[in-house]
Image 1 (cartoon, each protein chain N blue to C red):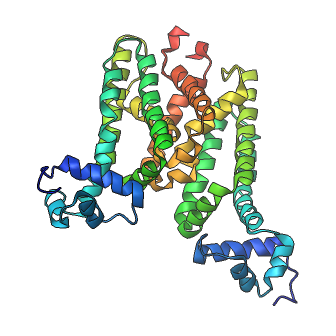
Image 2 (cartoon, each protein chain N blue to C red; image 1 turned 45 degrees about the horizontal axis):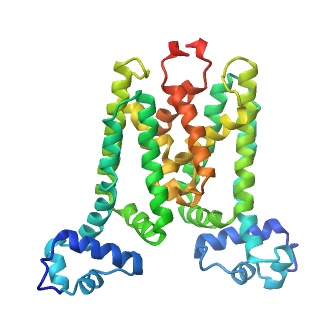
Length: 198
Length: 198
């Protein structure tokens, strides 16, 4: 098995996800991941020198998978306020679905993410940058009032934390959480609109 | 010790808090609480028939302690938007301070609260009722625009979850969290104001 297919970082990360799903973060070791791949743990360490490196790569891969869909929304057409709603909605709903479809892995991911500062900060920066881009476009078009699009973007991200931060996952019960999102968005949207458009 | 002072629910709850602080929720038993009081566990069960009853009472007591300060803000004078800000700020900052001053007990409390649905729901209802009261006053005075003050109150509560929900406590690092609160509040406040006042 180890001789036929080259041991790529991608294969290691897939095996690590599967191992995490089965054993949970506390009990998963690099040796378990190596065993699932039929290789020595030294071969895994060659790609990920420490267990923390492997953890960060697993979290990073999981988060990066969402980014193309979020970028597509940000780069799309339509009024800026509506694109901001869709960006935040996509961010939230993707996580709700993954938490529901694969709860073991999502719990493992949430626990790992608490310690994986670098990929989490990179993810937040990515989302806030997309929100900033759309907010600035909205300001330029007169659809949004904001003296500081990046500060507004960060406020939007923070005000919707309960919908996208994994720590809030016990409250992601549908359709209640959908209604809660709409209530928060209504208030935020009114806060974004220029005062002379009402 | 058990003969001199009557065994009140209050004394049991104080002992339970102290025991939780020392052992954590997973390792605290009713026997430990009884031992700390120098009484039999039967005496504790007479007041709290199950461990879940004792857990709920500990969480309820902790949450209720915040209520007089929140009610005082709601019943106070001043513009309604400013009272809403102070209500949410008091709710958040009280928790930040308790989490910082007594981290062992706060972690134990947060863990217990996840299972203590009844007192948590009662607490949320209390806070949302105070926010509704102030929002409705603001609407009557022309300081706030809202077609449904209770829906607005719930949106305010949900949009500030990261500041007051214990699950978000790892991000309660000052002064960063203060700045984040102000950013969110600026956006929410603009969303509350009547459109013709800008």
